[in-house]
Structures are given as C-alpha cells and as structure tokens.
Length: 234
Image 1 (tube, rainbow, N blue to C red):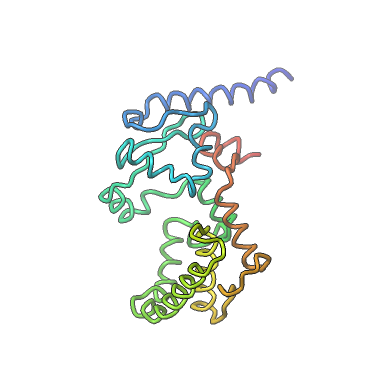
Image 2: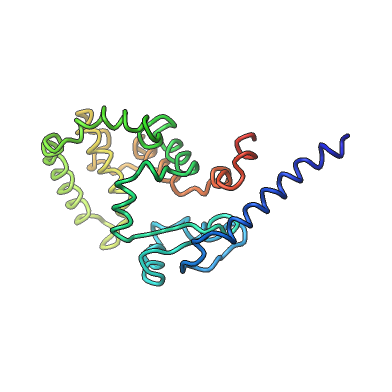
C-alpha cells in the first residue's frame, strides 16, 4: 500500500510536466520571434531581474519588433507588446485580461493587499473604481496641479545642486517625490520632504522595501502558473 502512496505524487509531477511540455509545443506564440532561452529552468527571467537598469525590453523591441515572446519558467513563451493598437485594445477590454496570480501576489506583498484595487478583478474592481472615481475627476486632478508643479521644481533644484555631479540615481528621488505628493495631496501632510536627504527616514526605508519586493524573483508565485495545485496546497 505504501508504494501506491509513493507513486501518486510522482505520477502527478510527471503528468503536470508532460502537460506543460505539450502546451509549450502547441502554443501559437512559438511562431513569434524573441530572445533565445538562456536558462532551461528560468528562461529569460534572470535577465529581467534588473530590467530597470539594463533596459532589456527596449533592446528586445529593437531586435524583434513591437510584438515578441520571451521565455518564462521551463521555457514557456510569454507575449510582450509595445504596439499601440494592441495595448489600446487590451486596456479597453481589461477585464478579459486578468493579472496572473504571481503579479497579484507581488502587488499584494508590496502594499495593496489581496483585496485592494490593484489586485482585485471583475465586479470587485468595478465597485472600487466607482468609489474612487471622484478623486480622479478632471476638476480634482486640475486642483492638484500646483502640488505636482511645486514638487517637480523642487526636485529639479535638488538635482542641479546634487554633489554627485551629472550622474544621479533618479529612481530613488522620483520615489521620494511621488510619496511626498501623495502625502500632501491625499493627507495634507508632507510625509517625506524632498529637502530631507536622510536615507534613514522611515518612509524612505518603506519605499525602498517596496522597490526591493518589485525586483524579487518570487519562485513560489511564478511556479503557480505551471503547478497551481501543488503550489496552492503547499
């Protein structure tokens, strides 16, 4: 009896792997151009880990055109497009293109939670979007323009006087400016003044933690794309 229990998980793993292989071989995406698979297990995902500095997608766009595939786990093809018509269609039919679970998990981990507007889909998202709509009306956004303009000028002055010279890590400063704008516009409080250059600021550390979560290669979440039953039961 024990050997039957031992064989069941082996059979499940074999069947799942075989199904993945068949799905990959039959995928119509394989007819598209794209970068070569650089890793049997991780595909091109390792190359994407530092995409903010390598600009890898722009490089691939020049090589393979506006619509191409790259490889995910086990060489599974993933579609990527910068075609304006395709993007417009996807955004107009957003509920037909739900976020993958690993994207929702990443957003939830960063700050949104699993029930926030960035992670929910369908009717739940429609209800939350309707509640938030007045805050994003044209008149309300227009009333916030002076805050955006003020922080943009302040950030410009900081960069012009930065001691590091012409090379500046703008991502960290843009994150601080964004958080400052959110604090003033949403809560009437400057949560992270741009004039404060202390890197030990609580909000600065929180924002840095969020960015580190964005760049983390979450093996469990990505694996859920291919082994949903095994991962969800773990």
